[in-house]
Length: 205
Image (cartoon, rainbow, N blue to C red; front, side, top):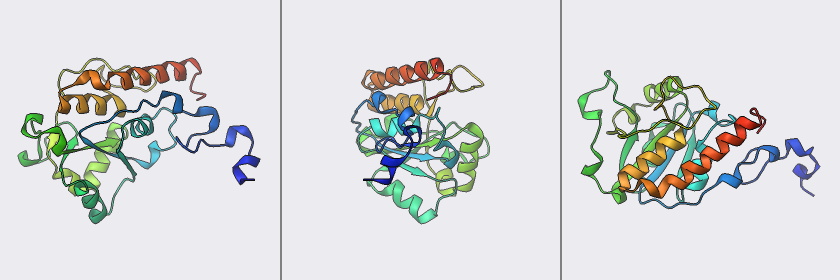
């Protein structure tokens, strides 16, 4: 008998999504393939956040990678960025403090099969700190999203209607890079279902 089998039900964890059994998100996993290589860098404080969307994104997009940390070893981070032999592009808005060479890159310059999309999972403040602490990320060209609608992520405070969750932003970016937004709509819809259930249960998931 495994030790976890002796734990009270509320403390048991799902081996797939790593959440407590009572808060398992596996029913919302939506298997998808993407020509783009997806690398998610998650802030440590987001790992246990019940409202977080990065784990669902990672479990849904085949071949995606999820690394947790705030400041990464430069060699390890560089290896992760170049592992697939592709061009790494950071999903992050333009900021005045960075040089023009690091600013937005039109998606049309590369085919989807040539790109590793790097997504930072954290609040705006946490993601800015991750960017500051990892100069390797500062050097990456950036992808600017276009045609954004309102976020459906109503369980977390946002300062503007088009401030998206990690999952929503990544899905939109993948669709933009592949030229097929509909391909990722199902996952966005499943995430909206998760948000509805979370709100209905007042965060008890």
